[in-house]
Length: 249
Image (cartoon, rainbow, N blue to C red; front, side, top):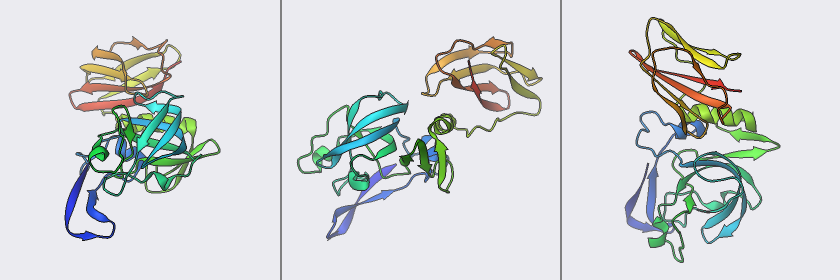
């Protein structure tokens, strides 16, 4: 969430200040818990290289897309702050830096605020609300990924972790005492065991796309041949929702 507060007295840095909050981990901004329920998660998560600055924006070459509609190989325009917006200044990063960014679709607010602004539909922005970027070096992602410590993960580990974050779980299975979700990796099928019969199932890929959805009473379901190797399974039952991350061959 972000908002601008008018200051009663002008300061040397401008007439506006940003009253902003948000989770201070990259995982936290993906599916924020209370009291950040009004915070807007990123629309896209990418790995990219900063090519150079244009006014208060920057051009980014996308190396990998973790979620959202931006494709690897695209060159995108990302707008930051000009001193009047709730965005991060793009000089946070040097030209040539490789970074993991959580980006929002541009709201075009700079066009009415920043001199010489040229924000266009289809551009993106980097908010200062919450933790929306991580470092990248030597094949590993680094920063406050899931907690307040400086963590280091391989790119593959980070992608799996981010999938859990997008699903609202960090990989821990939520099992009920009277029922559990079973995955048979040999037969590549799901089944339910226990008295607490489920009522529906949803399976999504790492980009949040639904690959299977419908009513389910716990009978075996085969998941072989899916385009995504890692999926998040959500099962609704009388006591709530169970989530489980599985790897499909």
